[in-house]
Image (cartoon, rainbow, N blue to C red):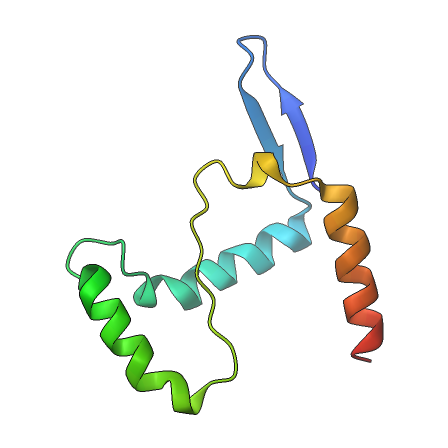
Length: 91
């Protein structure tokens, strides 16, 4: 089941994931949250840039996110089509 968007009577949108997707998202959140620098006490921007610069030789990819309001702006049909193609090419 893909992401479902439900609009409440007050106009607020709620995004509902399938149980499998929700589990994956929860596991990602648990794995990534210790590295989230927006959380107080995790160093902020200067520490992040320094850590990233030091780690670059060891990694091929860097992920920077800013998700507030981000999901509402994504055309999920296009996203899923692109992800499907990327996943098929990596098999």
